[in-house]
Image (cartoon, rainbow, N blue to C red):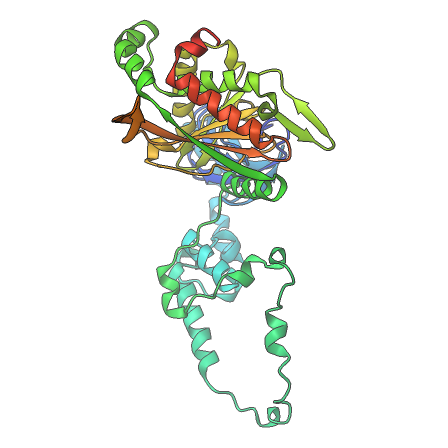
Amino acid sequence: MTIEIRVPTLGESVAEATVGKWLKKQGDVVKADEPLVELETDKVTVEVPAPAAGLLSEILVSEGATVAIGAVLGALAEGGGAQAQAKTAAPQPAAPKAEAPAAAPARGAPPSPAARKHLAEAGLSSDDVAGSGRRGQVLKEDVVAAVAQAAAARQKPAPQPQREAAAPSPAPAPARVPVPQTPHEISAPDIRVPTAVSEAGREERVRMTRLRQTIAMRLKEAQNTAAMLTTFNDVDMSAVIAMRAQYKDLFEKRHGVKLGFMGFFVKACIQALREIPAVNAEIDGEDIVFKNYYHIGVAVGTDRGLVVPVLREADRMSIAEIEGKIAEFGKRAREGRLSIAEMQGGTFTISNGGVYGSMLSTPILNAPQAGILGMHRIEERPVVKNGQIVARPMMYLALSYDHRLVDGKEAVTFLVRVKECLEDPQRFILEL
């Protein structure tokens, strides 16, 4: 029995995905629920499991292709081991016949990943290059050789006896690279300077993942839509560091999770959001939507890009619950196991660039939110306390906000409240 492998429902508002990587090859025997292929959406990477035990008899969609929900990715011959192998052994003699037509090798053996990158860069298709690989597969070396050959042919002077009369016409050059009226009219091919043939082999072209494309698009949309402004302050972290040093061992023993700084910052931000509700709101057309709940997004960096899982009802969580949930989010984000639902619905975001050593930054809004707090590294700096110059562990804070919705006074007040709570942690414990 043959079972179709289809693209599953990936979550609300997600209509398509990109085939990231096949984890099994055609002909592999697989177990039930064993991951077969990774699908990349604009939010997460998900694995499609085998619907039953058997043999992966057919792969219909190649890596990098865009597929809709419900699309057929491949087929599974149900059964396993010897039975599944027997079902796929018979069609094998037909393979040599497919090599007879000239176009068959290109379909049966697609270009190698490196060759695809160079083909895209050179503006060629696999039909333009003779493949030297197995079954006529186009390899990177084939593309580089074809590009070099074409360049050498272009450098040979061609006789143009009749062109002298038409020489005064300068139209072709400006027609090929039009001068845009605004920066938005510049397309990517116009901006990028063509690579010299001698350097083509030293570059690597990698297709952007769906997640990276969406990150780029949304960050640019936030800049184009919101009137973003950033205000700064610094905070003396002495009180938080002292409290952490005093209770970290007992905290970890009691709750099974390490006491970090993020729990303090989440609590401090919630106190400030209660006082300045505009920072916890968003613009919807001509309306302002005030959120009377606190879903705090926590930015987590992964090798696939930045993701922002959300602490729902964070105001109802203890510091131990916040730290535990953040640790869980971080682990699952690095493994690519966050669900789409866990990254939707945030009302405010906190980004900790300090873990990477950042001293200062201007974070970009996570649209449609009106505010994002940037944390930075802690370092001892000289400050004046009671008329004396003393060294204190200081951190710069940055609040980026949508000036269409949040006034400067509100933004500054918000940041001052966060500073006050962190310099005197008892304030948010007592909700003062």
